[in-house]
Image (tube, rainbow, N blue to C red):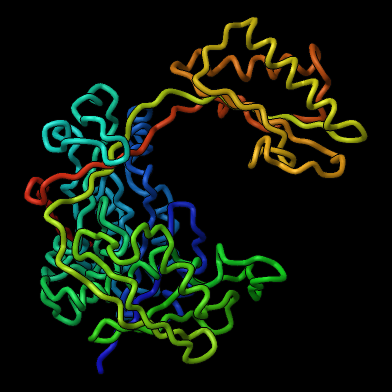
Amino acid sequence: MRSIRIGAGAAWWGDRIEPAAWNAERGDLDWLVFETMAEATVSAAQVRRRRDPAFPGYDTHLDDRMAAVLPHCLAGRTRIVSNQGWINPDGAADRIAWWCRRLGHAGVRVAAVDGGMLTDRIAGLADRVLETGEPVAALQGTIVSAEAYLGIEPILAALADGARIVVTSRVADPSLFLAPMVHEFGWALDDWARLGQGAGIGHLLECGAQVTGGYFADPGYKDVPDPWNLAFPIAEVGEDGAAVIGKLPGTGGLVDARTVKEQLFYEVHDPAAYITPDVVVDFTTTRIVEEAADRVRVEGIGGRVRTSTLKVSIGLQEGFVGEDMFFYAGPGALDRARLARRILEERFRYVQLAADDLRIDFLGVNAIHGPASPCGPEPYEVALRVAARTRSREEAAKVGREVDAMAVSGVGMTGKRVPHQDRVREVIGVWSALVARDAVRPTVTIRES
């Protein structure tokens, strides 16, 4: 049976670059796929562009990633699919074409996939917010962005037009990996069994090192060899959609039934109905077999007809957070922290801090479980984190000002952490809605290096 090799290049915007370069150089790949968009990426990019018109709108690590992998990919047969385009895939495609020319490769076809942005139309297209039931129309005035999750079809169109590299805006994570499979094997777009299997494999790859031991380690219980040297996964995918998940020899981490099972159910609410734009995936029939060390065969994932709607991620302005942190060390550190908390609570009343929520946590003591945290031995050092959620930037700024005053007008601190410019940040809430599939019109543009 014919097979192809698909390697992961990133699991999010801030992921490491070296494992992608290893896969490009030594992975003998047919395809290298980058996934760099979290739920809030589009909204954060829109906010940044409002503040800085010079912001290009695509992955801020695009240059570093392309410099690391393009020399190997262009020298061999490896093609690239990436969602590093964020809110400006055309700009990203132009930049990648520039890199191809700089590396001496003329005539490389680079495609940009766009068309999912619905910010100006979402109030008329979507009915209600899935998480709250609130009418989408009621959110007008606070909407920062609204972008539909595209599927494989525009990527397939770009590949059919000869694109060697495809860079997209918002595309569902599994679809980035499924598109090369459909392109290579010629699967029909209503072959739900194969599409389900392929999308399931894409789901295993989309979070990169999470399936090779990252996010998995629990010392003494789930030990991971050389976790500082984790590789990104590589899948050998057959024409039937079944695949062997592995990694490069000589790298850290591991691939076994446990790492695969954990990633299989990561962010999956209903294992029998994992909805993607291309197919509804059924993980309940999955068969996982350890073939050898760091080689796990995955097959039997099911698929059903796709939905008539597409999911839209909506970014909303939801106020501001004022935050600061400072420290105490030595005997009595926790008592000093408690006194500092009382002082700050009283002073926030003096300045009439208008906060929807206020938290003053002792990191390492009660910051995660709050009042339910068990009492332990007296800590030698304590970090005090202060955060308030407010409606305005001016109210949020009160947090940092009162913490500054603690240096000489409170309980003398050992040190501070948060830089002045980072103490106030805008909050962008991310919510979901559904729109009719035919309301979204993807576009594909191609340029040559």
